[in-house]
Image 1 (cartoon, rainbow, N blue to C red):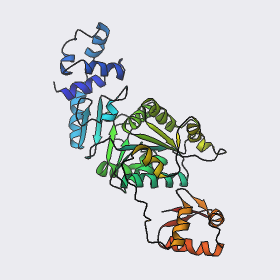
Image 2 (cartoon, one colour):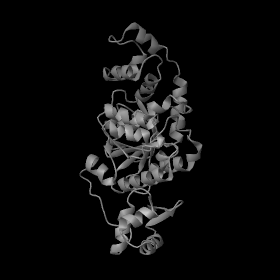
Image 3 (cartoon, rainbow, N blue to C red):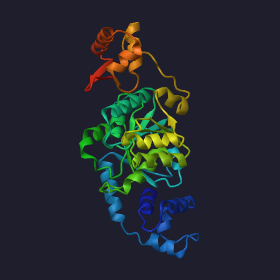
Image 4 (cartoon, rainbow, N blue to C red):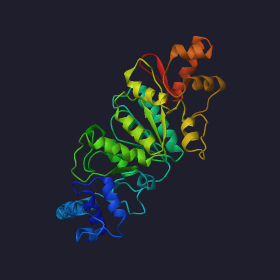
Length: 350
């Protein structure tokens, strides 16, 4: 029996949790003999649960299909298995990986609301793009809203992105992200601990979140409500010793209640990408040059717009310039594709 087949089989044994299975692997030089006879360190009940596993043909068929899909099965014993994930208390015994680039230490998670605002998605995309340009890999969960925006932003840079699924690699959930799913599979990495055909059941997503947290040096939460799944990721990150960060929002908006609570509990308040870099990646150098050539007035107005959206009235007030002059500068910045006007009289950086 091949070692890969044996470890996949152990991962699917019923009645043992991940911690127990990891302890078994750590006591064995090879896992395959486990299914040929009970080692002395196992009690009789555990031995019965292991010997009850019979789905060998299913694993053989799945491995053949994974090979046709260009999917790699990484076990916790493989050198290519992410080291940061191996160090959490209950790592997956097996990871199914679609994509060619290695999962390294320079990984940062961005998670948040599925029902995100335009502003929240814009902020997430810009942060992910900046980090990726510096070579940081952005991890998220491929959900609609903040997750999808973070993946899109990261794909614009060289650091790429990791999408961690709560289902098998042959399923795209949600279906609306199929184009993004395919692109990440070609340019980034898709990871899951679930075998082919496993549906996106509700209980899978908290388990998925521990992988996102385990892979990452830090976790940024954007627009999380009070019971958001993103808070699970953040609290797992606390247990794993990760840097937890959040972007604050209105105290009257329930969509920010979770993120604001995290800050109250000690998460680092983030109002610029520099905060993330100084906390998690101090050796990286952020290029602060503007995306286009600007004169001094344009540069000034561009700096006022900042990372989020801002209303034209606030730009005028902060600039202490005449409204007519500010509008002319904003028009020039739009022509240079440095900023964009969005509904309601707001401006954002492009």
